[in-house]
Image 1 (tube, rainbow, N blue to C red):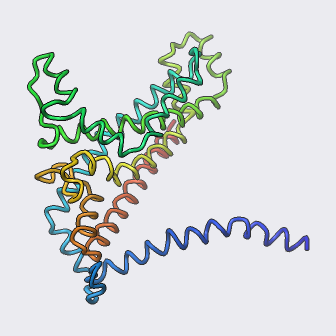
Image 2: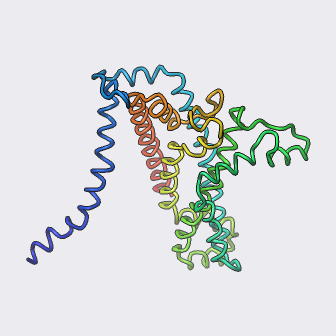
Image 3: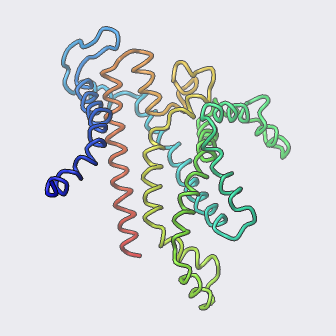
Length: 298
């Protein structure tokens, strides 16, 4: 019994995770790959094997490349400023502030609120005629901006929504990592006359590099799968998923939604899903490699 307990029990403990992952993760992934090789309609079902025809059509699809460009733009505009702001916010929370528990709980509040409510509020803030942002811009002599009609304006508005929602969450992750940095390292730096700024970049940031790597990879995955914020940013186009009148902020997941659930083309939308999966995998590997190389040089 002791041998069985030593050899078999560990596998029994971890088995539920792999069973759940196989049912809800691996099987849908492989099934989606199979569907992407067929002319598959949600209503009429499988219409026959077409091989790589869906992928060939996808690479020649201007709407796909437009959605990919929008996705990358929104990812860059929201992710990098978000992580930098989270790092600075975590550094402030790590100091001896009064009511630290209140402030730390407060930064997580945007992440607790329903994303649908957040999107609707920001849609009103960035309204063209009666939005608060345009009102404030008018006070300094700037003409009203049609945030939904212009490409870069809509990207900035949606990115600000994503940053507001996720900056506090990442800040708390950084704060937890900063709490584990040995205090004697800071004391030694202070005795050597190092400033707070120098201490932060020479001690704090190198010490929490694994955490920064983790948030960068997770934010990359989330940023490239952006859907709810741009989908709800234009209340009039929510049902279509086109991302504006000229697809100016349609992301890849929104295009997948349009093809799969509005036009019922499951084969084509599955091809989009797999291309998105490969893009995320490639970016995550590049991100991981770069951060590991930076960490090894440090």
